[in-house]
Image (cartoon, rainbow, N blue to C red):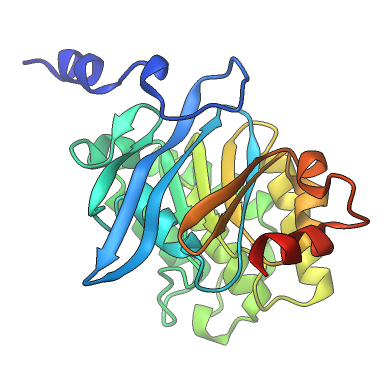
Length: 261
């Protein structure tokens, strides 16, 4: 079987999606009845949603709701107990390598090596992803500018501020030009100026990427997102626009309390 035939067989129809937000866009992130059990404890239960091409979706919920677990299931980092995950039509259970070519995943504590510099780390990850030397040079220049890293390229990552480390992680995620970004708490622990810079970057990326990001900062939802998936106790309790989430409540904080009280 040729690689082209294999790709055609593994990229599945959008009509097989578990859920849809009603748009006509191409499904890029699909959770299909995802559950993860640890003994008798259910970290997630029957989680289903679809994020279409061009959407920037916030993944909300209290601590322990199952957000990080769901993201790990979507990216193939964890195998589900039941259910399926797809990225850009690729089944994560069987086609994770192909999906990795179009996916950028930034966990809350990203894979940064403190003794490396941003320059050497980007060169290393570019080589691991199979980019040619010319591609590495081109993409390094682009992500360094995009993430404002020029001032710290030669400094050990372990000596950088949390904000700069977060930028390095984002640059690494963007290096191979993925179509889909899954970002777990991208502004956690940052100061207000750093948060502003990350928000600005995500808004810019949202012009060309499909993004799912988890956050506890409700202002970020209003500032960056056109979609909200809300999870509580391992189950989806809301899926819609930020405006629909707020409804008649004076603010999103009040609505958050209602959904989790």
